[in-house]
Length: 94
Image (cartoon, rainbow, N blue to C red; front, side, top):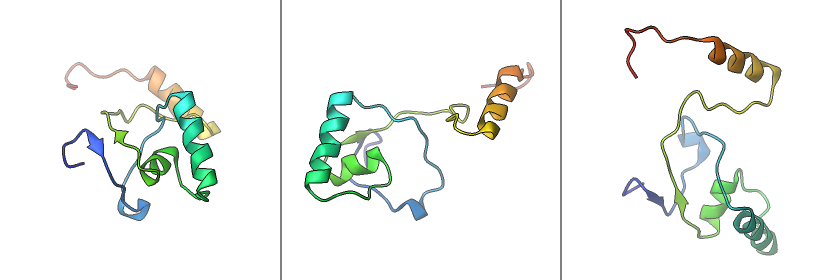
């Protein structure tokens, strides 16, 4: 973003290296957004954040963590279990 806080546009996903979930929305706002998008004929957005931008809404960004993983597959659960067991050596700094 230009100011590091608010986005007024989006980039094609092919140009991005990584995105992170989950995103956070108030239920009323995201439901209304999807309803308005459907009425406008927008049915192929790749994600709710992209849809927000397509519908003229602002998207705010926050710092994330590589450890914030989405648990949807058996492999994801294996990674999660390994993260739980992992201990950082004292010499490694945050």
